[in-house]
Amino acid sequence: MSETEAPAEAAPRRRSPLIFLLPLILFGALAVVFLVGLFAGDASKVPSALIGKPAPPITLTALEGLQREGRPVPAFAMKDLAAGRATIVNVFASWCAPCRVEHPFLVAMAEAPPVKAGRVAVVGINYKDEAENARRFLGALGNPYSAVGVDASGRAAIEWGVYGVPETFVIGPDGRILDKHVGPLDAASAGRLLARAVAGK
Image 1 (cartoon, one colour):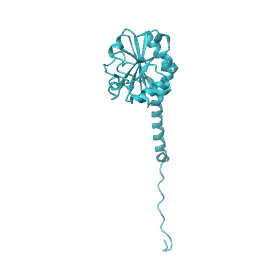
Image 2 (spheres, rainbow, N blue to C red):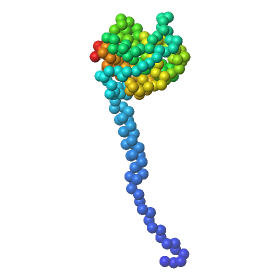
Image 3 (cartoon, rainbow, N blue to C red):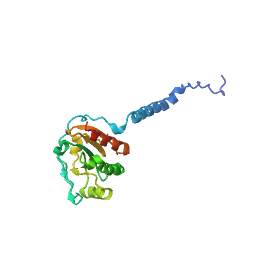
């Protein structure tokens, strides 16, 4: 080798194309797992360990200043949930945007013949809300509830296994939880819950 010649460099080692594809493959696998989890089941049908069991005892106060047809709206008591008729219990809050979306269906439910005839009651649990805001919410959108209990601390919601607002329960005439809907009601889900309440089992 002459002094003017540069030493030959070692040929670079060729990397497998899989090394460059590995991050893409991992991302794709994670995306598939996420999508399967997202669409595998209906999020509104989150299983509850309380289905078929008596509604957990809770103590709620009335929503101060709330009136319906010129009379104060009472808080519902546990004895009201086992009074020989089914009860639909809706957990709501004025600050909850999905609660506004579902509210027309609750108002329509309250006008349904089984509710009007007293076979089914529709009551509300006002969750972590300001009384003034809750009254304004119901005043603007209509009050479908014959009774409203205030859960200012969120303790009652925890006892009932509430994931977030809105949620709706169907309580049978014997005080047992028959069904639970997570998320805002639509026409189909409201009709299904009302039919379940009328059936009472």
